[in-house]
Structures are given as structure tokens and as C-alpha cells.
Image 1 (cartoon, rainbow, N blue to C red):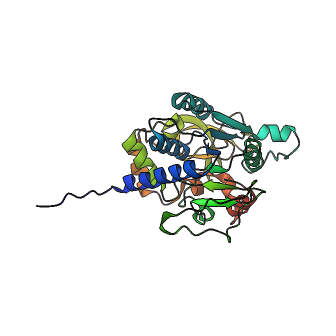
Image 2: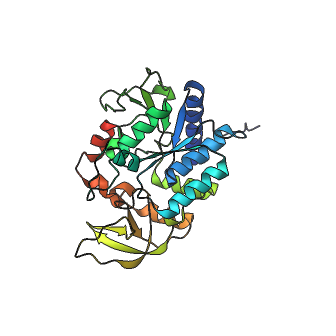
Image 3: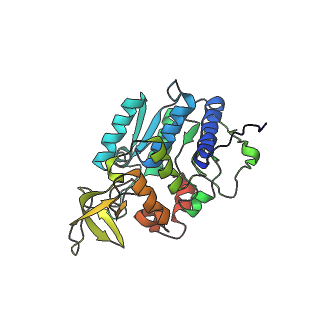
Length: 302
């Protein structure tokens, strides 16, 4: 008689790991929060969290660090998703920090770096001790250095040389008051895994992740959406193109790619042959220096 075997698929194994991480945090931390922008990674993260605690809703709120320069489609999707899942949404605004003089805006640099102050303020004001983020190790080399549980000191700063071991999927969440842990349930996923999971699970996403026509501007080798937030240079002229976004963020520095993919399966086929990560191909703020992301992470960025 042949003994039955139970074997997880690649995606099921990734999902099981993420479920374990969510439950571990819920069991050991008092005030966790999930960072939620409405983007594909945060949406997959929320989908897995809903599975982890079903039939109850996730036992923590979601927080959006709002630059004020968001795509309209993404904000509409964010609010609709929060209502669908019955979640509490916390919004911490970069504009509030600008108005209060806590940060100074450089119109030419975009607002992504200014998110750090808003993020740390939101964590401090709500006393969050664990913060779920959708970062993945394949996105960028600084993010590849992160552990699943990433310790942050009382100033919200990260020290890449002082990381805790995570042998046998054992996580150390010990911290003092004022300190917190960033938690990355999708660390071991790739962009292709994300899209295959979206296809398999029928995860809903903002419409801009799929092919559509919109006015764009060519700048620094990237296509930027021509929105009310983008100031054109004298030699720039918008034109219409058929594009989609691989990631969403501040509209002034998040690029799109020419594409005809209108479904998850078509996006999977595109991503499978891509040789550039979505951040490397479409995020202008990551091009500030060779170590730009790591420098921002040390300051407390995502």
C-alpha cells in the first residue's frame, strides 16, 4: 500500500510561511499595524493576513503613509478595499509635516524621502510596536539585507550590521519601549511569485497595474505619467501611450512601462522574461545614488 503524501506547491509554501509570520506577530506583539498603500505587494500581504485570521478580520489596523501625490485610481481602490475588509485605516500625511515645518519639500526631488518622517510619526503617535511591510528581497540590494524581523531603535533607524539571526524560522521580536520591529512576510517572494499568486487567488488590484492609455512624459529613460503633480521641463511634451505600472507610489517619481497586458496571466508572461526589477526599472527615487535605498532605510524608511 502506497502511503499518501502531502506536498505544498511553491506558492502554497510561500503563503504558509507568510501566514506563520502574521500569526507569530499577532501572538507576541501588542500593537501591530500593516502598511497599506493599495499597491500589489500590500494587497497580497492583506489577502494573506485575511486568510491567516479567517473567519475573524485581521486583528490590526492598516496605515497609509500619504505623500499627497497619489494616483487617483489607487486612493479610490485603497478606500474601497478598507471598506470591503472592514479595516481601520490610519493615514499619516507628508503634507502635515510640510505644513508644520518638520520637513522641507524640494519640488525637484519628489516626496518619497519625506515619507520617513511621516511614517515614524505615525508609529510613535499610535505606539505601534510591529509594522508589517511588503518589501521583498528581490526588489533592491538594500532590501536583500533585511531579516524578516527587522529591529528598529528608538529613533526608527536600521543598522544593517546589527541583524538578528533567524535560524529555523525562529524570530526574535524582543524590544524596549519606543523601539519597534519591521516585519516583512513577503521577504522570500519575487515579483513573479506575487503575480502568480494574484492570478491563482484572484486578488483585486488598482486598474493602473494593467494596460491602459494615458498621457506620459519621457524623462531620464523612464515614462512618467503626466498628472497634476508633475511639473514639465521646457523641452518636455506629453504624449499618449499604452502603458501599465509595475509598482505604485508617488506619481512624480513612479514610472510606467509600455505594455499590452490586461490580465494577471499576461502580466505573468511579461514579468517572466523581464531582467530588471520593478524598482530598478520604474522608480526614479532609487537612482539618487548607488546606496540611496540603504541610506534612506538607515534613517527609518520602508
